[in-house]
Length: 89
Length: 89
Image (cartoon, rainbow over the protein chains, first blue to last red):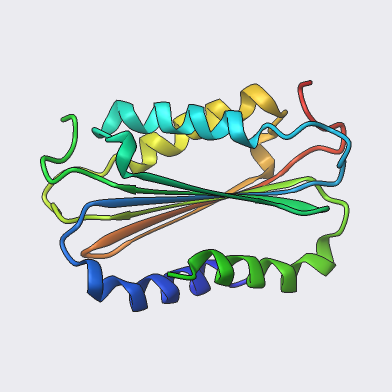
């Protein structure tokens, strides 16, 4: 479906402004066939962040979260600017 | 930066073909300022999958993985078709 191409092209365009920054961007999209079920994306977000923090230092001030929901889908976006000191090893 | 808009538009277009399917799509993009460090995205992928499996049944045959890497960034894409039986509750 070419989503990855779109994603990549969009990032290439934006990239020049943020050179040499360690940055993680995570998108989770959930197509929901069963709308009556409660969403688990907000919980999932917390757990994904916990997993990421095993690998890199994440300052919670450097995390921006975007969550959208409509009748058939939810999209969760996490943008994380990583400290220059880098990974946990 | 409008990435979410691009993502959403792309999904809307593709959506009509796959109505009423439970589906999760996860993109992890890592802008790497320090290229000499080993990548942790493949390990991260395993752990994110493990987290997701706490919430929904995931048939490993229903997971498609795409991984790309160039000098300055890595992108990991997971596409998961969820069983119609739905969540773990």
